[in-house]
Length: 136
Figure 1: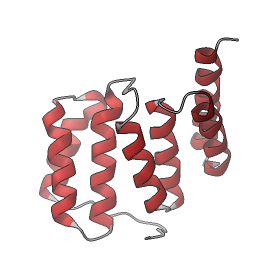
Figure 2 (figure 1 turned 30 degrees about the vertical axis):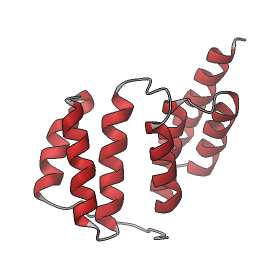
Figure 3 (figure 1 turned 90 degrees about the horizontal axis):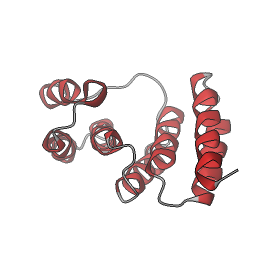
Figure 4 (figure 1 turned 60 degrees about the vertical axis):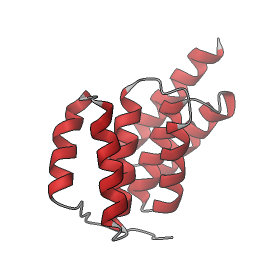
């Protein structure tokens, strides 16, 4: 199998685990993909999502930043990484920083999966999350 196919399989497995709320298993799959290609934005982004769901905001923010510094494939990773970074800042009570991230998302012009509507909503009203969070 080529490295690209291996990475795609690992990301797909990770997404299946995440869909079943098995976030630690998902993270393991995404990490294997990153071990093959450290600049794979999709694997880094998905890892950030799983960490966010686990409430590990510090680690999630790091992964979203890494995704933005990666290959930016697929293109929608950029807008959603900014949105998720903004959500993390909102959770931490850092509204100014959150707004800056939401504005960066708006500036991409990318409306994949309703991103621009989400940005409009988040610029008006800070993100609030139910559930556990580990702030750190």
